[in-house]
Image (cartoon, rainbow over all chains, first blue to last red):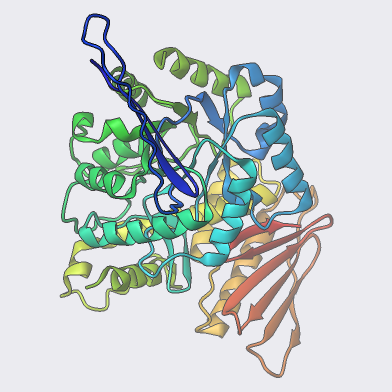
Length: 312
Length: 172
């Protein structure tokens, strides 16, 4: 016997369907349909996320190229912040992209790790953009960017601790009241050593379990951190089952320090790690990130195709 | 130390105006400060500046990597941020930044850029606003918004107005 289980959470009520089918030679079994109506919940969890394929982190200079090569790009990841409080012209760009591509909004400044809570004005506007796009999911970072009225302007690490988990859980719960989309969270590079109470892998496991979010696995960030802090990178210790999306990009070296600069081609070390991930877990979406020193677009396409071959 | 307290101290350290090689660790006996490494804070601040600088470069016609490198050295030395302490020092720093920047911007003109700086206006309430007038091709205005504790540097070219403050770089 096997159990077919379909679990769907919708805004307003919760329905669970349990279907117990009959195995050919087993005694007659009874199919039971149970529908439970629960208290209104506004949580959308990341079950059964769409498989989007292989995409690109969109930047305005790419606009004409992505249209020319749309058959090779499965979807675009857009930076939500670029379309918040934006000009009419910028909003038109978003509408054009939405009409022609599947979009995943990736936000930068919600600051989910802020111990003093979320910026509600930012959250409302972010929600407006995301709810307009209606994406398969949205993503943010496991970090903070502002606190006490001070904007750092960069993703800043938080310690891997119970207190950080509490802060993230609280902020994610609040964000969900505004954003009706599954949430996927990205690991960042750590330029600063903080005192941690647990490993990053354990922290991520607990985070995804407590908040029912999923993982945007930035493999370049994991690699850069391991190299900079001279630790080994063992993917088996990480919650790969929670990974639904992967970011990859090239890193640069300044003195003895690696930076996920997003300005060079993805190196072979990162490609090898991607191969390893794909053998262990089916990834719903991969995204190539490139912010500066843009090469001919064909080079970006070649990298996307290479990863696409690996991710079959 | 609570997470909130740690974050507020870190945010202050990462954004406050001081030369890159002078980081103030108020109480080195505290375990939070003990876990921080000065070299990492410096590196983080440099990364922030490079990010800001990339924003500036995207608005200006700078094509040479060497020129960008030279400019970045100047940019880090006279970095623009929002600390309202030491107005005179900020004013002087911005003046110096503009004074160094202008001659390097060969992308604007084939002519040699002669730098003439004059303080055109000095308000009675001197902390409100300082105006710096620079000869063609750039006019630079530094606006002090004391209420919002924000300084904005406006660079005006023939075709556009570039606004630089703690929120980033905007081109109008």
